[in-house]
Length: 219
Image 1: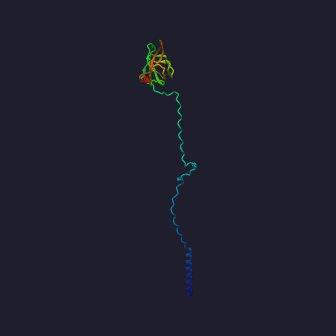
Image 2: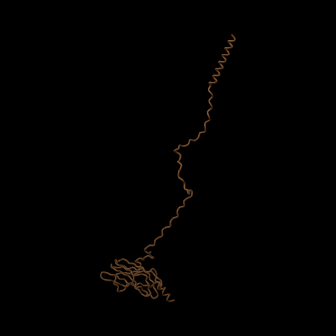
Image 3: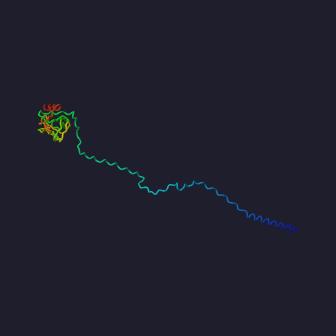
């Protein structure tokens, strides 16, 4: 009886050992610990927001400023075909009336003005203005040539002259020692009733000019 009780105890112990061994084998292995979370990184922007790489090649001298071109000089001024007047024409009302001869038959008034007093051996500019009182044709104004008087201009010629119109002429006059004291001017014009003419006288001395010449003679 004791042997049977001992055998039963051994058998129970063996069964218990087998059960414990089976439990130890079937138990699941412990799961490994989760890795630490990686530091948060900034997400890359979408591809469509990134600028496309440039395919242009910069020029070699892009870093150096390009100098601006120097301004071109203005073109030379071409000379005018019409010479510029050296003096202004005097007003008709300020000009002197030339003295006409008693035998005058041309209806023309002649006015004159010197730019300065005539002085011996020095040229002076003389302005003339012929004003017909009636209409006519072939108006001609000329200086009578005399010894000692130099006139650097030709006659004034007008094919068709209108009444009360001033026809002007500017000429250079040089009075030499043998010249007379008066300048003679011949004016002619054709009219329906015939050709008229007349002589006009313009004094070359007077006023301050005459006093200067007189003082020179006394010396």
